[in-house]
Amino acid sequence: MAEPAPPVMSSQRPYLLRALYEWIADNGMTPHVLVDARMPGVRVPAHAVKDGRIVLNIAERAVAKLELGNDAIRFTARFAGVSQAVLVPLEAIIAVYARETGQGMAMPEEPRPTTPTQEDGVEVDETGEMPPGDEPETPDTPPEPPKRGGHLRIVK
Picture 1: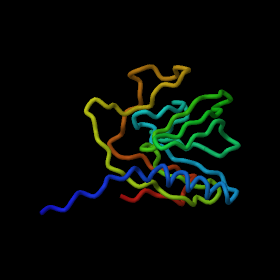
Picture 2: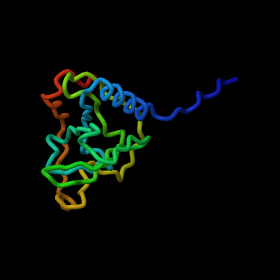
Picture 3: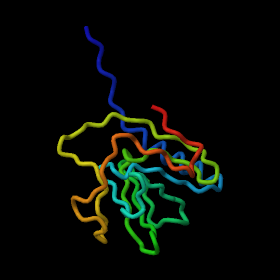
């Protein structure tokens, strides 16, 4: 007789994100997230993306209407003086850390189904900064993490 399959659990990412956010904020630090801006569904200002990644300050004082949901982070923030809506699916979050100390953690990889019709690329925001078809090309090698959060590194 075969053993029953273990129950499927929901993603641990939203719980880790909320716990780390609270821990960083409770210690008076500034929570930042490192995001893979090439992932499907990411809506960030294209001009702020460097090497396919973006670091977002998600401190209460830096954003409005912050929602740390089970599927995505949503908020409004100012970029170059212009208020913009931001949407980051949790799968696109690479790491959560405190700006001041670099303490935090890289988010664990989770298996996700792939669809052949999915395309990687930054979606245009409401200002239309990137016309369709002008998404940045995905390099063959992953880009280096930003120098600012030097205490974190991605280990595969």
